[in-house]
Length: 167
Image (cartoon, rainbow, N blue to C red; front, top):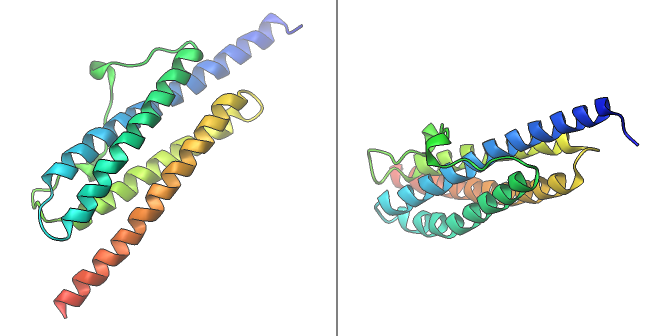
């Protein structure tokens, strides 16, 4: 049977994990908002495919937020409402030039890289402490890695098209 001291350490680790899950939840909600905004905001021929992809990814990012909220609740944490959320995705703000698809794609890549780093951090925190949460964040990290890979490919294609047009 564990001592009170051991239980205190375990509770501290669980609270720290729940706090990081909350940060991930905020990031996912912010991504949903920005994907929605950019999926409507962009204009032009090059924007069509990106808008379609962003619209499709909204559902998956929202599902991530739901899974995170469920896990936060299970760990005894509180799921934040809109007034308690902190956002910082500067690169994902809709551009003033509605045809600036490249900046949106770069913003998506940056947001995905942020999510990957956050999930890696949580996975390491959970190692040997909370295997269920670790499994969840490893799965979510894999989804984000796929999104990042897709948008890195789109960026290369966009840059190639734009260089071709400039020649």
